[in-house]
Length: 220
Image (cartoon, rainbow, N blue to C red):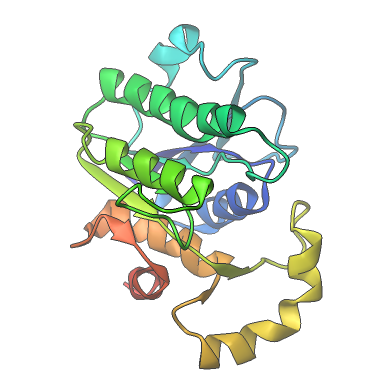
C-alpha cells in the first residue's frame, strides 16, 4: 500500500505543484486536499474537504486521522500585512492545524514549507524570518513521528500549472544558470515534491531542510 497524504495550500504555486507530484507518483495511494475552495482537479487518487475556517477543525477530525503525512503548503506573504495578521496566519493557523493532526494521529509526518532565510534563533531584524523561525521551532516540539521544515529559495515551476507566480514565469530562463552558479539557492518544484515524499518514506537526518537537502532527498 502506498502513502496517504494531506495537502493544504493548493491554491498557491507550491501547494499546487506538490499536489501534481503526488498525483503522478506511484508511491502515493491517496491525497486529501483541505482548503477553502475547490482545487479544480479531478483524479482517482484525490479527495477534497472544503472548510471556511482553519481555526475550526473539530468537524473534520474523523476525516483526517488515517493519513501518513501532511504537506502543509498554506502560507502568505508578509508584504502589505500587519505584524499581527502575518503572525496569526503564519504561526497561529499553522500550529492550530498541526496540533489538531497531532491529537488524532501522532504517527503522522508533518512537512512544513517555510522558506530560505528563516531565522531559527527568532532574533532576526526581519519580522517574517522571526515568525517562520518560531513556527518551525514550535512544530519540532510536537509529538509527530517526524517533522521536517522545508526552506526553498528560487523554485523552478512546473510547466502548465495554473498558480505559477508571474515573476517565476519570466525568470524560468535563469534556472539552469542559477542551478549551476547558485546551487544552494535554486531548486525545482518537482525536486521539492519528490523530497517531501521521500522524507516520509525514508526519513532524513535533519529536520530543517535547506535547498541542498531538498536535492539530496529528491534523488533517493
